[in-house]
Length: 577
Image (cartoon, rainbow, N blue to C red):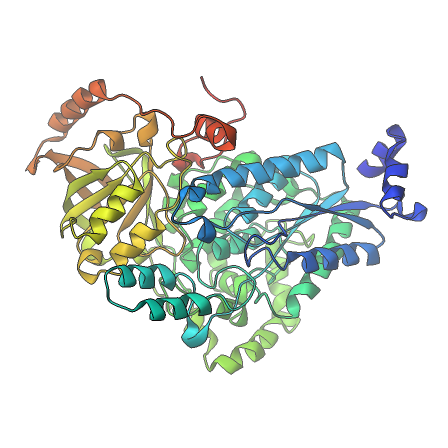
């Protein structure tokens, strides 16, 4: 007996309550599918999702089931920038996952369709899927079009910093702002939203080729309808999420992440998702798999083209086809077939020919966007995990976005206890070439782990600083960020990590090729490792934790219970005292 029917048998109120909201009596005995989406007027990535939820529901109905729509609207990191709202961003991921758990546990369903687009929503849905372990399929809301002259939103931070420095007029800035988001969908660059849509498909939880479609194309609602139909097939087969997603699935996702030069925030989200699936995923796994991985995708912010071109070039299947020798092709997917079988089927069903037709109006070739495996943009992945006396648990750098001068460098420490202090120093020219700007107490337990987007844009838009300084933080970065940025430093300052002990003028050694991040000197004078350890011991003895920035509400709960950035920044079920 299906789970929904088991509940009907023991809860006599279930039938009349559903009839009261419009269900027909004959629909009560059908398989019942939850359609969970982040629809809401919160941002372009979610404002169009109601249509997709309705299409998925129609697909369920056509396949003989009955759908129920549930909503847990997400927030937008872009709208949360520049004020304390960004502190709530990571906490919202866990809050959405928790609400979905409540939805499904309070009214059990036979399967679920999960529809979202953006930074915290897609990870939240994936976390909830792993936690619930019901038959599940993901449908993402695609990507927005680029504006005039291929303008995309991640460039606005650069233009804003240029305006602050008097390099462009207010009118120019306003024009850019009003043209950067011409449609619904995720922002059109390989930021966290685009990255996590791709990760959902790479994990095997989406129909092949359905991640990162242009949000305005008719393929998108058609794919949502097929997702509803497939949810019914999953319900009938009993194929649950943990039957699909395994350790090998996560390794596949990491290889795809390397090939697309995905956001560093994947190192925050994938471990949290893996935790819900009962899989241990560490930063060392990312580093191991990225070493020698071929980086193929020429999409912004590290590449040339807007993300809408990704779908035209063949999307995730085209990436997987190029790196198939590096993948576990035997893993199961939501189609009920293996990854290898899916890729073989796409070769023969006209998928790539259709993509070629969509690509023609751009005047580009597929290989202009997705390089061939033997002709990559880079051959050492995109991400490196650094360790040392400054980051014993690790730190993350997107080395494909960092200037070569910062891959091996010794810099002077300039520590700040908030992003506001740091960005003020940068814009007022108090930061000089050779400085290492530290922003600390911005990790999960410090302030909720906001992203340092404006700071990275202020640096990357200043050619002199972009080539000569580094930014280091226990916070995180926007997926749009580029430049010399090292984040997720763990343990974080709020937990007494070494980043809390850094003082003005300390010498910091960055060595990306050798995956090292260490303090090597004091007041401009180098010290031996043994001397540095003694110095840090003395500083640690005098360190005192800072008072929490929040005392009540969801952010207070999050900052009391979140694990370290390198473990995924999720809330522990039983907070440590």
